[in-house]
Image (spheres, rainbow, N blue to C red):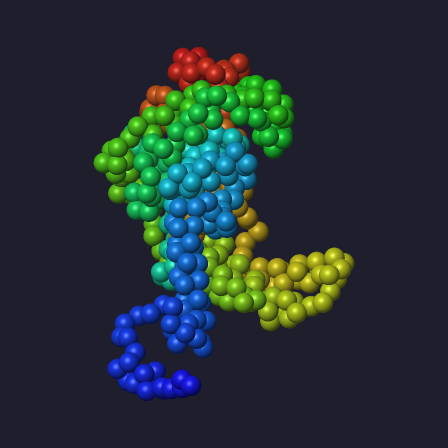
Length: 378
């Protein structure tokens, strides 16, 4: 009878195991090793997939960035500028040029303006750039154009021409007349310049298109030479405060900024921000009372700003913020006034203040006619 001898020395011998990686070994795949290896493989696979999706795939979340203006057309133009690689300053410049086309009753190329620029990513204090001086002469850039040029030279990324071309096209090809423009032209009796405007009709501004086109062809060096020293924008810092967990930045110096901060402080002192009342009959008198207190405390005069203004607010995907305000002191024909200056330099007392008399002596001039024809009729 044969006997079977059970030997345990082979599996128990230290050098009986084969050295090296044995993927089929029960020891290799046993216990928690299999779980750990599986999780590692899955993690690596997901990481690689996410890398390629982020680098080459379509955006699942739109990069934050926005353009806000008083005009849909101008907001679209600013947004397109950012889509083409421009930053928030580029978008703001393009949008403001657009507003000078679609809202000639509000802002002109020779208007004034102010911008606050804040780089949130770098957490540096915001800077205020003011271009509130009158143009030095007809041989230099109009005031608003000079201010926008300064912003471009110091903060812009795109080509200068690319920022103006959309507005040139808009002025030349036409745009829909807004209700505000139609009402303003009628109220200011400016039909002799623009014709009778009706809401949603198309308006073409060929003269303005030609003017903008000339500006768009300027090189950076030419732009610098056309901004004289006495017309350089003023650069200052902001005033600020914290209000309801928000950081408020406003222009300092002689502006409405400090007045706003003083008013907000009064809101806090009067505990108005914690009021549960939402009833107009209770809330509005409190606001009026605070405004009266601020008016008396700051010894403000009764003469307030008389003019028009428009605002552009932009943020790009690099957290660069800009708030740009363009305004003009009350002038009925700010657009056509500049048109006259652009077509033929004025001499001596031949100033924009005389535009009303020019208008009366040339009652049938439309924008489609040249500014030179208006000069000839005078």
